[in-house]
Image 1 (cartoon, rainbow, N blue to C red):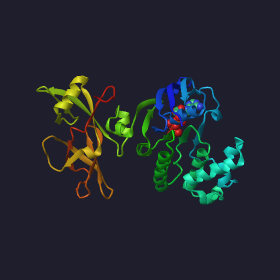
Image 2: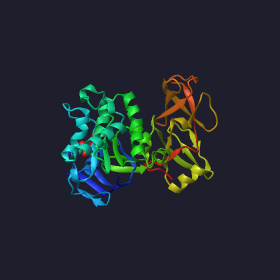
Image 3: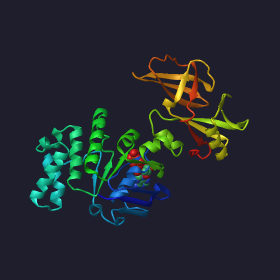
Length: 363
Ligand code: ATP
């Protein structure tokens, strides 16, 4: 296995930068997810690492070698795509053996590697079947097996689960995680699904508009989003982002909503905003950190319920506050109706504060 380093990587089409000054290191044996909305540059980044696209500038290192000018076949990588790309006429065995035959390996070595991959991926009983005789999940396992037999330094995976139905995706997610755990493989994995990234990856690279927004463990990205984009992209339902105005009252910061209510801040949060010296503040709060009250209580601000969605073990309420929509989760026995007057209390220790001008987290 190998470490992969992207150093100031650029891919431009004319004046448009599909990948814009991206630098990151994938350590040996790490599972890294490139995640972001459609068009953010994640597939382009993966294809640059694979050598399927020429880079505009920067360097890509795999192991000890700068691979900028190497052909894909010389990069010691194996790709897994969402469409599986299996040979329909060949059996599973032959699909797995084919890349090794192309490399002219001896027949008994090919046999050993194919059987070992089939064992690891629990598909020994499927070796004689044709792809059309397999379920979507089994086909995806064959695609993974074909990458595995090549014993590459790095696995590159582009949305490998996106053709599977919801239930199978969840199952394959666990299997891929297990695959990584067992092999300690270096994996770079592209997905637009933040939940896939959060559940599987050691680190996630959150991209937007060709730019790397944050690169850290899922737990860190969740707990300390670097900016408002990351805050709203990671987590479901999305973190609520409420634009407010900061002012000083008796030496402490108070945040005022568009409706005129004021929210006093704890001394810790006050200090953060005083240091940031900004008047425009965006308050970020995850659904589970907001308490919904049906009557006025101190430190809670007035809002209006908009939608109420029971899901069984939790009910999601959306409310309007200061021109923003706020997501709140409440126990199923809390009875709230659309348009009802409610009061929201924010957990001061778990609230996020962003600079309304730069959209960066206030630290
Ligand atoms: P998706 O999840 O939709 O696949 P992505 O994050 O993988 O999105 P990319 O495929 O990497 O996005 O594309 C990044 C940007 O580069 C997009 O805006 C895309 O339109 C643009 N792009 C890709 N290839 C070309 C090209 N050959 N010429 C011009 N622009 C391109």
